[in-house]
Image (cartoon, rainbow, N blue to C red; front, side, top):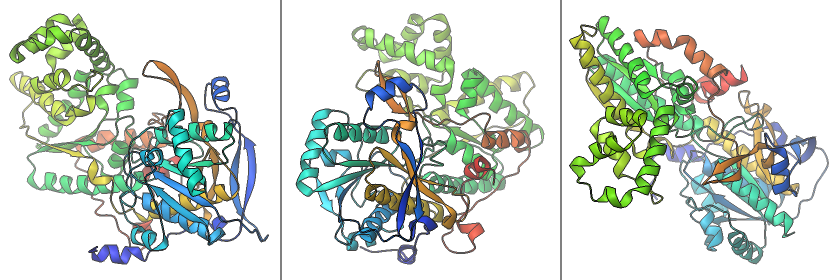
Length: 548
């Protein structure tokens, strides 16, 4: 395998660890826990893993002889920078406790467990992947572990390989599955521990015990670098408005973090749009006013950051999509015979008055996306809507009308960007390299202490790494009941942007100034070598949340 100069240098980086994980480790038991909501329902579903205590690791002078243990590891869901370091931390941790321990990786996600597709991860393989981005060491997949026959099929291979613990590295859905699996194996007395690790670049898996999901730091730094480059270009050419869509379907953490890093002219936060019951036209008017105000100052350029899931947070659009879903499913036969050129008018006639008016206001291309591109269940595929183009087209239409009325004096030309996959497999920042390695090492300590149904937790991460607090949090503590596909299911509660939280308040205190002034920040590329203030800084979000 040919390597770049950076890859070669990066392979030698030794991730920093919390002091508590550096020698002999003992588990200190904390307070008993309960779920964030729906306590009775969650307790009933998880009788063997509910109410377990918080765990904190501390150093001990006691010599502990740990038996060798065989451990399995799964990468689940979308990629996030640092996954390889979770695996290398886990590997080093189990080997440090007993050299005869073995680590097996299940190939292409949870499906590898069910299909008995695996490989042993040896030192020479692990060493190839230290401090690298991506999940390519064993690949990832989106198979959901939900059915008992899957659990039993998985147990067959775990038993065959003598695997006593399984580490699932994933987001909220994957860790929900890990919790269900832990409960099932405990109820059956199979003697298999299940531990989760918090992964998602979207940043929506966090709570009082999980400060951040891994990969968020690196992804936001990658996006912020590119947005900064665009802002330089924007301020140099002075003739384009750049509409930039960023990943984050269920929450706007990425858009908000990037805004704090680069200081754009506009950043839409989906949670605020929903809380204020804003319509699509309200969002368009807000952007158009900023464009007009800058034009009045002679600045016909700017940047707009848009979260990927915005459309689903606009209450009126949510109602339109719900009615469209029902209508298109119930009238599929009739609709299939309507000529393409007449479909738009046909739908406008058939929808309720409010939804008909909104549908009619949409640009033709977006209206077509809403009716043509449906998933296997017949639902509108919201993720396919090019929100950045939708907004810029509607802003252009509004500005043209304002020009006629003499309310707009400038020019408006737009460019579109979507940053998503570019950030998911970047070489992890020092923060993510250290954090992920610590999460993996902590998982090994949870295994050594016989825990199951826990998520690896590393806190106090705005402090130097040796002061980080390593431990475990019962996954049931994060659970609540939500309606999924028509029935109530236990799931980990998603963390949305808190409108009363420090990151959002810091943003709102400055956004009016950023809107009219050109006060861009250019973060530049991630730095892996150099002074700590350049290389090891956590996200602005985390610094503000921790108030340090």
